[in-house]
Length: 563
Image (cartoon, rainbow, N blue to C red; front, side):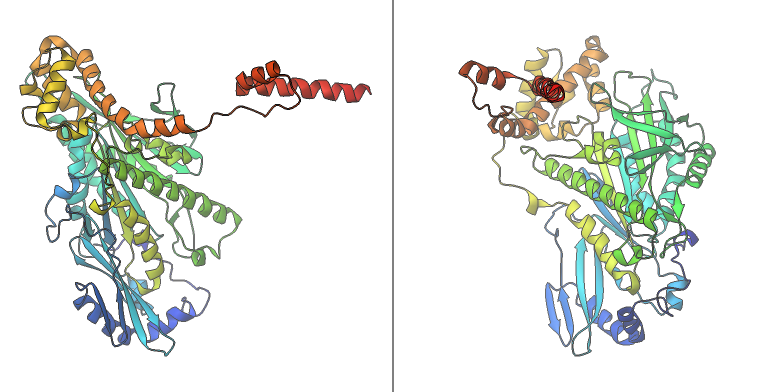
C-alpha cells in the first residue's frame, strides 16, 4: 500500500519534546523488548488463550462462529455475496515520520480474514507485556495490498448489483490519518471507468435494447451534523435531504451530472474533494471534518417502472480520541461531537439492519432519522425497503504503537456490525414469511396470486423464497415478462411489490403487536368533572386538546388582567 502524503500524521511539536505521552515514550524506549513479545504473540495467535512469562493473550474473536468466513481465500468474492452487510479492515503501512520517532507496528493481518492488534503495556513490576485483541472480518488487507487489490475484492462485486437497480454502499471509517481518504479516492478512480464500461454492455442486455439503455448520474454531497452541502459547486450551497409524502428519499437543490467518460468522472471527483471541509488537527494537517458522499444513480430507460439503482461511496469524517481533541478550539470540539454522534447513529442502524437480515421473522427498529447521513441511506438501511441492498464497511487503521488505542476503538466500532450465526435468535419460522418458503410453496403462491398469468417454471424453476427475494428487481421483472409478455411492465411491478409486501408485513408484525399492547394516551386525567365531560376529554385528539388548553389559558389570562 503506497504512502499517501495527505494521510501522514503531523510531525511537529506536541505536548512534550518527542511528541508522545510519557507512557508511550517509555514503550518507544523499550521497543526491542516489546518487539520480542510481539513476535511470540504472532506465533501463538492461533491458540485460544496463552499466558507465558509476561505474555498475556486475551483473544476477542467476537464473531468467529460465522460459517461465511473465508479463511485463507483472499481471491474469492463469495464474502460479498452471502449477507447484506460485510466488514473489511485495511491496515496501512508505518509512515516515515512514525518510524523516525521510533514507533513500531502493533497491528497485523494474521490471516486473510483476521486482524491481531497487540496492545503494549508495562506492568506494576516494570515488565513489558502485550495484550492481544483478535477480530475476524470478511476481508482483511495488510500494508502490502494495493488500492487495486482492495478494489477487486470489495468494490467490483458491487457494480452489477447497482446496475440492476440495487442499493450498494461502501463506507470508509477510521481515525484521522488512517488512510480513509486515500482508499476512497483510489477506489473512485477505478469505479468510474468500470461502471461506464459495464453499463454499456450489461449481461442482461437483449437484442431489442440498445447500448444506451443505462444512464449514469453523479452527485457529491458533504454532511456535517444536520447540515448538508453540495460539493459539486465551489460555493457549497446548502441542500435538503428529506422524505417525500410517499416515503421516498429526495435530495433537493443538489447538482447532478450525467457521466459520459472516465476522465469526466475523475475530474468531477477531484473538483468535489477539493471543496471538502478540512482543518488542521494534532494528528493531521488536512483532517476531514465532514462526511463526503459520492452518489451515483443508475437509470434504466428500458424499464421506466423499475427503481433506479444507487451506489454510494462515502468517506466518513475521521474519528478522534479525547487526547487528540484536547488541543481543539470550541468550533472543532463542537464538530467532533457532531461527527461522533452521527457515527454512533450509523453504527446502530447498520447493526440492526444486519440482524434483521439474519433473523427475518423478527423486527428490529432502525433509527435512520437520527442523522442526515442515515436518512440519506434509508433505502439501504430500512427493513421495510424492497430494494436489493449491499453495504460494505471498510475500517482503516494505523499499525503504529502510538495509535494502538484508536486502532482498538476502530476495531471495536466495526466488530459488532459483523453479526454471525451466534447472533441468530431461536425463533420458530413463520410459514407466512416468503423468506421461509420452499420452492413448492413459492410456486403455489406464484400460481395463486397471479391467477396463472406467471409461469413458475420460468420465474422460479428451482429457487426457494429466500433465493427469489435476492433477485434484483430487473431480473425479477425480466423473468415475469418472459413468462407472460402480455402482462406488461406495470403489472409485473405490482406483482413484484406484492411479494415484498408479504415479507415486510411479517417483519413488522411484531412491532405492530407491541404498539397495540401499549396503553393508549388519554390526554390529561380529568378531575372534578362530570361523567359526560370526562368522556369528551378522553375522546379528544392531541391537537384538539392543545387548542382547548390554549383557549382556557387565554380566558384565564384575560380574567386576571381584567381583575
